[in-house]
Structures are given as structure tokens and as C-alpha cells.
Length: 442
Image 1 (tube, rainbow, N blue to C red):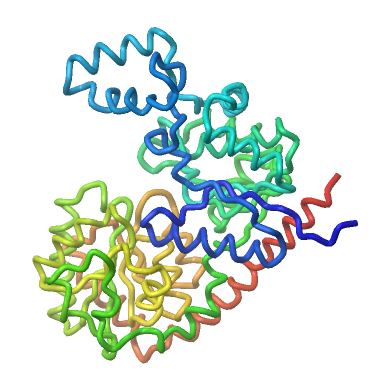
Image 2: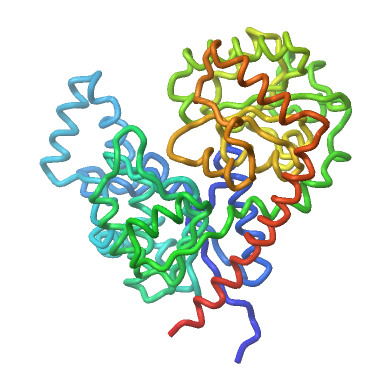
């Protein structure tokens, strides 16, 4: 018997995404799996989106390498009559998205098209060459209407693995109803059929586990904390990595107005955005500016943290309030160190709050899409008083300030949070054991 480690393919590696969570969690997932397996290949999360994957729309009159022109015309059809005419012609001739609501049908079509699209050739070859495929669930399984293409792509990838005879596992996942559109029953039915073909199904939080047990009891599912918790040993000792002069953390492209504002040798509070806040940038900029001014009036040193490109509205807040900002493009470990050594984080970003917690930093959690922030608060043992609406109104400021002072008082929360993240780190490190056992199943 060969003593070579088994080959792993990760589908959904998001390190090319500027989002701190996508980068950090994907790197951490690859690292923790690499302790037991050989992570031979990774398929990036950009494959989930038809504008970047190179094969999303098929059956076009254009050759495959020019199908992105059809996507461009489709995207701008409302503003140009020529584009509307052209896209209707393409659709009449059979142009369609290969990712459908039926994951098995999607997988079969992708296999049938394998020889025509280099990406599909590469993906199928990687699946065939692997001993196990791990689909990184990240935060995409919110049962929206219409369904998220990312979620349907993951299900199609699982079906493709089943068709090719390669064991597959679903890990690091959030599963939730959509707070806006409610539950998509078609997606739920697809999950019931497809996830049953996985050797292991692991969700990252208790709320997702409860959802699975209530709505998909036939799927053997267990909770394994987010892979990012495995960075606890790194970020719990990261204070010495922060320069006194914050100019040394400014990423490319450096702007003149960024210099001379950041220092890490004094206490500071970090304020970050959320997926929900990014949907309404003007409204969010006004609400955040009001909040930052109140924090400054209370004597707190504020650093804005742009944990995702969609938090661009924070640049407006930085200008309006003369507050320094850590850019989304900051190296991920440096960004984590800034959060891990703050006195407090106020944010609606799930992974930003984890990065903070790894150093013991408590968080005021702002609600966002799905249940992610509430479930994280419960996971970290934070009080319910630490959770607020997506955009706290001026009327909420007093309560938020009181909660912030309670969490920062005497740094009493830091050792509690650090102890909890240490436990969650150990729990997250079980993932290779779970997958190893799954591979031994007949």
C-alpha cells in the first residue's frame, strides 16, 4: 500500500477574492487539509460566476471563447436596443446558462461540453485525478429566490463528482433561509437529493446545523467550526507583528491621503461594514458617519476596516470623519493582526469578527444577510446586547455605546473570547479526521 497522502481537490478556493473572509478562510482550509492530505489542485470561486468562469453561457452563435460577449450584451440589454435584439436571437437559438436549477442536469451538460471548454476540461481532469473533492461551502447557501448561482454551481460540482465516481465532501458551509425572499423550496429539494451523495457534510455554525436537522434530517450532517478558527495560534500572538507606524501597512496603490494617520501603539476601535450595508452605499455612508462621530465624541480612536470591496462606502466615511482606514487589499495576516489587537470591533462581517476574536477582541455584531452574525455571537459566547441592526440609527447609539463599554471594561472579555476561540480552533482541526474517516466508507 502506498504511503503517499491522498490527493485532495478543493472547489471554491476564494483567495483571489479581495474579501478578507474569502481569502483567510480559504487559505486556512487549504492549510488544515494539507496537514493530512496532499492538496493537489484548487478551483477558485471565480468559477461560480458566469462573467469570470469562461463557460457560463453555452449554445451561443459565437464560438465558446467569445461567449462572454453574449454575457456583456445580456447585462446591458435594458439600455441598448441592439443588445436586446441580439440576446433574444441568441436565446431563440438555444443560448442558456449551463448552471440550472437541476444540479444533475447541469453536471451532465458540463460533462457533455467538456471537450469544448478548457475550464471544464481542467475541472473534470482534476476531479478524476483526486481521491477526494472538498466543496468549500463558505457563506453561499442562503436559499434565495431566484437561487444563488454559487449554490447551484456547488450542487452541480457534487453531482459531477458522483457521475465521475470520485468521493466528495461538503465543508465549511452556512445554510439558511433568505430573510428577504424566504425559503426557495426548489433549492431545498435539490440539496436533499445532491447532498445525500456526499461522504461528509459539515456546516460551520449551530444555526445551520439546526436548519439541516429540521429540514433535511436524512442528510448526515455535523458541525465543524469555520476553518479560519485554526489561525488562533497565529493571531493570538500577533501584537508584535503590528508596526507602531501604520504607514507600513498601506497596500498598493498607495495614496497620499493614507499616510500619517495610522498608529497601533495606542488603543483603537475598529469599525467595519457588512454585505447588507454594501447594498445601499449612500444610506450606509450616512449612518456609519454618524456612528463614527459619536464614537469619536466618546473619546475612542477609530480605525475603519474595509474587509470587502463592497465596503467601498467606508472610504466616504473616512473622508467625512477624517478617520483612518485599513483597505480591503491589505495583506490578510496583517489585516487579521489589526483586528486581533483592537479593543473592540463593530462590524457585520462574519470572518472579520472571527479574525478579531482570535486575539480576544470582542465585537459589536451588526446583523446582515442570513443568520451569520447572530450565530457567531452565540458561538463566541457574546451577550445578546452585543447584536444590533445592520445600520444602527442615532436612537441606537446610546445602547451601542453602553454595550461597547461593557465589552471593553477592564479587558475582562478578552480571556473569555480567547479561551473560546482556542476550543473552536481544536474543533475546526477535526476536519481532516472527519474526511479521512469518510474516505474509508465503503
